[in-house]
Length: 313
Image (cartoon, rainbow, N blue to C red; front, top):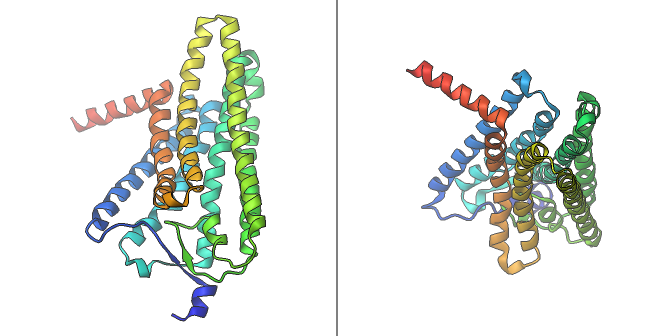
């Protein structure tokens, strides 16, 4: 393959660095993780969509999270597993495919924040305005909030990747396990200061909106709980909010770790591993945390397992 075709259409992805002896065990491990994530998240979506007594705003808004987790895992893991079984010099990807992968990688990352923001708003209304909850959190509002979360994610990522694809590229190696915006604009020999500045602004906006809104929401919830001294209200707040906080912390720590490590080139291998874990840990833990901590879903899972046990007997 000549240099012209390399520099204009075909890229070489670094992939996951594993020894030949460990390639098959790592492949099997990732395959099992991928299957678990798919089954757990798809199972939750099916359960919520088919059980009428789970058709509450809280659960319907939550469906955005497993949908996003399925997207985030599928856009990275299948190709990563495929590359593990290839020689490092044979891990090719077309430029168009790389841009597409980077686009959905960033949509997944941004949508994580916005989906958890709209879920925090739902908890705020439920606890701070319980008498108006059914009037505010209608099916129409659920749709509006979901569209807002995904629309903002798509808008920001479209601008981000739009600034990158305008650049010519003189290099052909993606120095990352998968394609993302930073690895794409590093292929260019042009001035990428605009990309760096917008990337920084983009990160600050997403993190500030996410952390700020969730923090303010829970401060208000805590204030209401403290001033009301209502044991029933406090119990409800703890049960419903602890799950959301746990999911938010898992996402925030996973995302923040590899962004933080970007600032330290000497830890590039750790950063690359952390970027993969961001597409594995939250999608794997979210259905466990949310499914097991939410009483209605937990009861449905227990009921289903009991039925299966009786049938087997």
